[in-house]
Length: 335
Image (cartoon, rainbow, N blue to C red; front, top):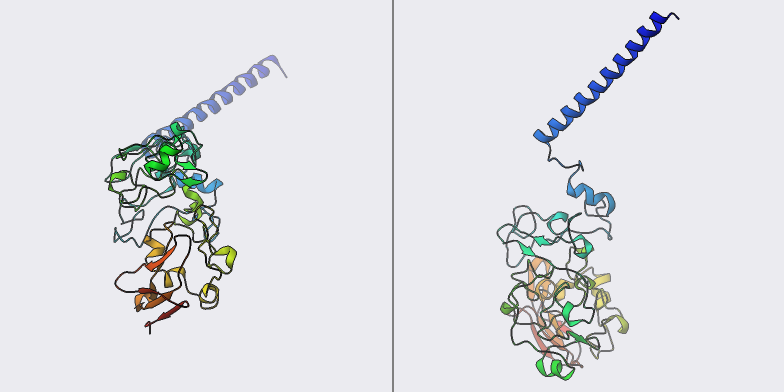
């Protein structure tokens, strides 16, 4: 190859490299321009929902899997008739990013440092421990706590009155809190327990500073789990009450739970109507409310045995189902 030919090929090679570089720069510019005009300027080119689904089992990525995480929502609310946390309901549709963020948070479980719902002010969240660690200074950094005592739990029992609080060296506050930075309380305004403003509550003793998700599991959309404290259904003595916090009922038989649930296919709410969705659980009151065929059959009378350890059996559907104490466990006047 002559010197002239060698120089010719050298110039051609340089021109090709130049054109390739220019083409790359033009492509990068056009992609960037399109992103600015049409995109959201984020490096991650997928939605927050797609990001969560990629690593976690959710009701979108693994529908029907009992281990999939469910969104907190209600389609049959007693307060919000159109439901809440759903499209067209109160607050609109909740997503993973309603409570979680992948960046810029000091909270555990990637919980946002501020949660905002439509129609509600943005509220700060300080979530450091799933349950109380015993340090009174950390009693507000849990999921929920309405206790007025600086020592919230003692010997695995809730401290709920001033005498008990002061007898173990705690400090009792006469003031009930009216705000909260606890993750389960910043959004609650109409719940029976753990509201943002606890002054509006009748009961301040419910499972304070304990791990809420022990009963209200993410895999059930934080609906209370029927098997957290007792069997689902109770089928023997051991599964009547399994929570050590409240003790046994004093009964030695699970009754007809297995027959009604497993053989007849009844749900808990068939005989414990209202109690299931809105009842005052963990108060040593067993609520009875008969509700068959979507309410076509409702009411009746239940003859209940006497209980021990301060447990009582009451009507959970006042005005419909009656309860009386007597021999046996029978229901009548239903059909």
